[in-house]
Amino acid sequence: MSFADSLYQLIVQTSTNLPSDIRRLIAEANRRETADTNSSLALATIALNVDMACETERPICQDTGMPTFVIATPVGFDQLALEEQIRECVARATKAGKLRPNSVDSLTGKNSGDNLGPGTPVIHFHQHRQDEVEIKLLLKGGGCENKNIQYSLPQELPGLGRADRDLDGVRKCLMHAVYQAQGQGCSAGYLGVCIGGDRTSGYDAAKMQLFRKADDVNPIPELAELEEYVTHNANKLGIGTMGFGGKVTLLGCKVCAVNRLPASFFVSVAYDCWAFRRLGVVLDPKTGAIRRWLYREQDEIKKLAVGQGFQLTGKEVVLEAPISDEKVRSIKAGDVVVINGLVHTGRDALHHYLLHHDSPADLHGQVLYHCGPVIIKDDQGRWMVTGAGPTTSIREEPYQADIIGRFGIRAVIGKGGMGAKTLQGLKQHGAVYLNAIGGAAQYYADCIDRVEGVDLLDQLGVPEAMWHLRVNGFATICTMDAHGNSLHRDVDQASLAELGKFAEPVFAGSHD
Ligand code: SF4
Image 1 (cartoon, helix red, strand yellow):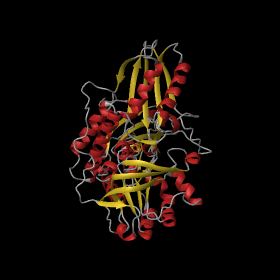
Image 2 (cartoon, rainbow, N blue to C red):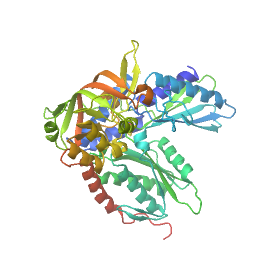
Image 3 (spheres, rainbow, N blue to C red):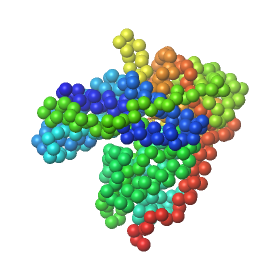
């Protein structure tokens, strides 16, 4: 096996197969969550999706994120040659639909199409004295990356009061970090945290904490205690999986401390989602053959699904476009809604486009899906969907209500929920917001019968183009209806009230 073969294996496996420790946490979450709730439904779908991705060797989530490699090589090893091979393997995995083309020129918006470009992929090299090459890879998507947060202490925090420059202040930040993410980063989430550093090194060190194994114990007793406290108590906030409300909100928390300037006290948080994709390999430095895998255990839980995922009961609302005003107003927040027929994808670039142009497809009575799928062409030149879960909807909050009104859209599918402006727009124009299970790329790809067409592909690239997909049995939960009800607003308010219960000091202040 060559370096290229081993690197390609690492990329494919990281995108399609969760590490043993995260599998265990998801299995545990499934056991802990109250049965027959929206959160348990979401967890069951997540478990099934993980199994499907592993079996088909397709992406667990359609957002395969920013590939971040952390590499240790022996002294004298040719790092430049390895970097070149990494870039080739990233492009190859993208072409094969194992990674979504995710590298976009920040000025022109043009997608490079192969996940290569300035700053992509991210590669950190170190040297070590072992006679082996260790390569770790993290694929962390944009939805959870957007929920990263950095605090500069002292700072006032909603519900918690002042966070001071001490361990108790850090504790408050971490409880707040979980609260502010709600379901938008595809909870149940995971925190990597750095206390100290500067603005850039703090975020970097926080992300590196995500390479620690879930069951390791922090060697610094205060930090071990903090990690345990946050993991345990964040689950009392009641945010639940996907922000549906429930017992499982956070899967883990890893904290490091690095030195800081006297004037600064940053707490940097890297928020990862349930689709916590990180693996590693140890390679022979001469041949590139894989000596062993990292984050894989002998007794790994191979099958996570306990039921059939999104269990349907026959009581669901079934929607097929074109949808009438009367039909859409009969749907209530909390209803399970199954979509059949045509849906049109649209995310950030399309919303921006629609502000200034006509829609390439007639959207009256139609369903808009916030989704940036992974789509490649098969041997016969037909489009093939290899991953198609929802993307985070809140990014479209500034545009959504106007676009619903202007184009007559009746249903928006996404994840994580939307805000007050969209809620008002749903009421005014007669439309609903349907929450699909974030990250369930294989589960939803399986609901797509065929790709009927695509618009704006050359202009916007694969993830941002407007794909016209014919779906069958596409299951969602209505979380915002046309009567002003929003489950997201309710969970936010309830979790803020819970957060307030953690305002009292727990850890002794360092200045006491
Ligand atoms: S699971 Fe959700 S937050 Fe994570 S990468 Fe996928 S869409 Fe993004």
